[in-house]
Image 1 (tube, helix red, strand yellow):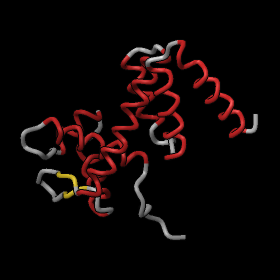
Image 2 (cartoon, rainbow, N blue to C red; image 1 turned 90 degrees about the vertical axis):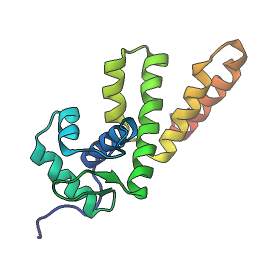
Image 3 (cartoon, helix red, strand yellow; image 1 turned 90 degrees about the horizontal axis):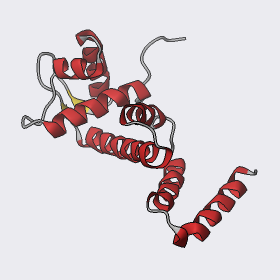
Length: 154
């Protein structure tokens, strides 16, 4: 069996991609440096370099040794999707569950790797019901819960 890197993006690489996106979004340069990514993620420079090589090979970033890193349209799209999911999850954990920001951030980043489109859609709908919940939305919540039970077979 051949050893080597998978030819698909992993959750670990998505974390790097999101950090590149966040740095690019925050900076005037519209690019990220290996050192910035390493600092933000708390990893070594060689770890970032290896991740950038893999992301570049997969078409998510533009990377050349000793140069800045920019996102490709494909990379920007995926990063924006993941950041959106993470923001909704973080908000859910904070506003609905009542967790602290730091814990919510960590959970959101971890959970976002395991949530498919269907799950994210259901969670978004549930969150929309609960975020401004009052007596007028009781029926909507009951309907959602009944629908959830049917979908899960419980």
